[in-house]
Length: 72
Image (cartoon, rainbow, N blue to C red):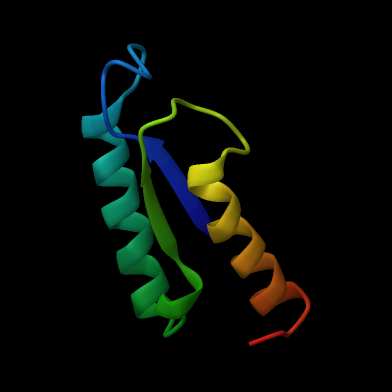
């Protein structure tokens, strides 16, 4: 799982950064308990809430290549 969250109010005035930090910590803990911590990545962003951007594209492309295509 890749989670991206805008970390500044300028690009995401509607952002719930404090709540997002708790969600990220909870997800990270669960992935650790399942012994798959390497399958979780948090990417702090400054480009607002978008599905794609130069800041997050490399992270989701790496995730898909590694976990769906099996490319290391």
